[in-house]
Length: 485
Ligand code: AMP
Ligand code: MG
Image (cartoon, rainbow, N blue to C red):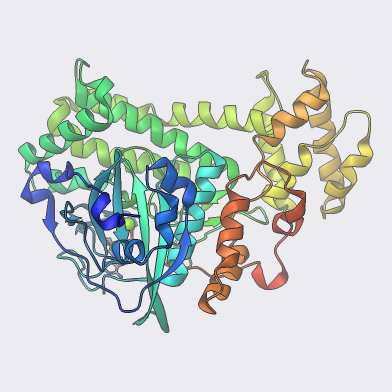
């Protein structure tokens, strides 16, 4: 078998933007690298032979210890708003773009210092690399736009966080890692030619259908706003919380990007903050839709020099709330098995959320069980009812819901199967990730592979894996996850 180092031929389309957009930067090798996790399905999708994944050259390549001859490794520059404040220049402080392969950018995260590392060490810990690998694949399984993860390699090399931890490199794959902050970067430098160069590149490469638009920059903003609103509605619909929705973590393609202290909602609390470092709750679950809008406004501001009209730019981004509410309504309807949309549905949905919150119902389990209720057999509701503290409140809501179902023409088995496709059984609960991390720290990587497989089919029953769909154990309920990674 020829070595992957010789056969993987990268192109360098990002480099065509010119020197101001990135710096050539080789990864810093790590000692004694070993394979932690692989994603053979993604490898096959990218045209990489999955058999290559077990070779030493594969490990060397995706740790950054050896470079393919075609590779022009780069760290890209961007800026951004962090927690609502202008943060100035950021950039790939610990990520290196190897190049594009099969239409996808391939990036190593945790591969050493770059000119944008600021106070950081350029590394990522094994723990956060496993979380990113598993969550991006879980999101993909859920059908939510996201960057992907090809593999993780580890090393005994230790780095300091709250305590010393071993480090790892996660290989990420996406058509582009360009962020809102990539545009803000040139806007705040008042460098309109570079801003335009970037916008033209993005439109030409990723939104070719917009090239013929009357005002392509306005069309770009309109489309990114729509994708962002849709993305966040999808997050809300599965209880996903990103944790750090800074503009440098917002993808220009509308992908979920940069997995850090994310979480999936368990006991429902709309104000839940998954990021331990987010003292003010700026990125709490209920805040995400509004923050998505705020971030699109930051992008809009950066694009004004290109669109040529403040008023039209404002109008483009003002469509965000309508788009978000339309998408959210569509998703809630699907989750409730409602095909039609009736006048009082929004009250039914609102009272459901209030009822779930008062009873601190597990977000994922509630909807999955709701997918099984039968019109003629209220006994099926018993397990749901038993998990409630305020049972009269539950009864009031379920009666309201049952009467609403009577207004639907869809027959029951069809409704059940349709609802199961909108209400996943399996999500990446923090404690499941934690179990996989602790096993990996003992060099047992089987749990990562098992979770990856389960989470790739989250809507399937997978009755052999019932325990992965149950409530978290006591120790796993309020695991603290911070920005430190
Ligand atoms: P994040 O909060 O992970 O999105 O990162 C924000 C910025 O900090 C980005 O520019 C990252 O590249 C940079 N950064 C985060 N962690 C490190 C690290 N360990 N070393 C260097 N740069 C980092
Ligand atoms: Mg980031």
